[in-house]
Length: 374
Image (cartoon, rainbow, N blue to C red):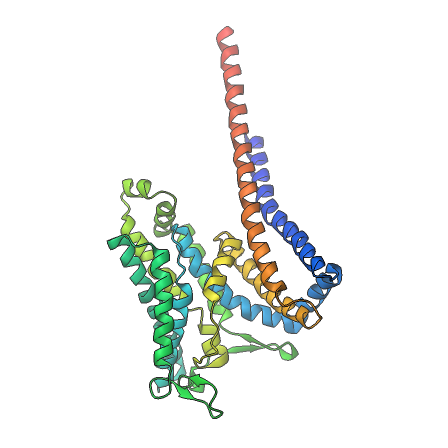
């Protein structure tokens, strides 16, 4: 029995490794075909991506991008673990960043107090905005997909209205950029100077802490167990005494709170203000990264790093004469290949388990029959 358990564990491990490897190989093949279809040689393109992507300055760029993408992936993954599709992460983080920027620009307290207040404000804003969709779902049965899509549009309209000169926005000296009042220097988050490679955002430390908290809460606490149970079967969770409605609302609030952190690396480490060039669409990138990482904290980290690597290298390829749409094609192909590969491996693993159980039952039946004959 011990040998059998060891063999099953090894096979499970191999299946777990096979899925991402199959996805990467399939994505590389399809991407190569796409590049070849544009009349270019995929070999030099891949070589250039690897060379440029692992340069020291590129590594800092990728880590900075991955910090933001990781937070987005975790925010989405919290909803996924509950079988909720929080499309509203994009609106939640932008509204949270805007409100936090307004608060930060108005604060006159020391930096050691201002920075926590800005972060708490962002998390609270994201949580409250996500709570609207959660409350609508548990009280009126409104789909979180519809509710969050509409809330994204409302958040965009609110920011656009308030971010105007004369309201909460102001024009720069050139008269081209509208922004909130800049944060005082004391409210800037720390950076890590890596020398010629560039400056690494200090908020990467917070992203790591969020990942550890996500792993611990969902995998090592009763709350995380209840959350995963509701996501797998609401009826089973309800029968075991778990309040399904409470868990739905709570998970949306937590997802929104994490979403509030997404804009903090840009606000506290880079721009130090919210303006009309503030990055958008990161919430939707988080959906792809959560899918890539299978809602696992380490998997999401690898997906975020891959996304940052692709963004850095494919933008460089554009200057080498390749079509700029290559990035979108590669990203879409990778996500599609990952989803298909995991499903293929899952079905194969399920079939192998059924075969093993059938073989064990047959062996037990034969042994019982021999004992009866004896």
